Amino acid sequence: MNESDISKNPAFQNLSPEKLQFLKSFMGQQKSSNANEMLALLMAFSGKAKGQGIQFTQDETDFIIEHLKENMSPQDRQKTEMILKMMRK
Image (cartoon, rainbow, N blue to C red):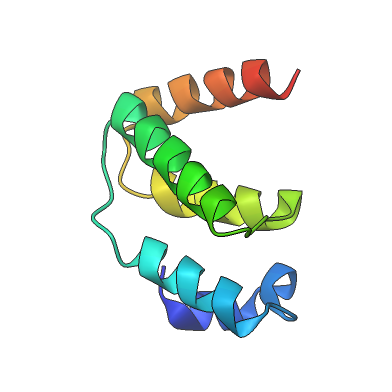
């Protein structure tokens, strides 16, 4: 996933410049192929965004999670989905 993926996605069409820069910075980080590491990275990202007063919509969050799952094995993807479902309830 790259910057053009962001610009093509309808969820990101009206981002503020600050939010877009924050997202690009996050997406440039090393991705993990491990579900536990991915969730830790997502939580750190969320905390950093919150500290800067940045909030993401559900569509934006879903897009970010898909980005993080790109390098995962099918087993880790399934584990991630299960954890996310539990967190959303």
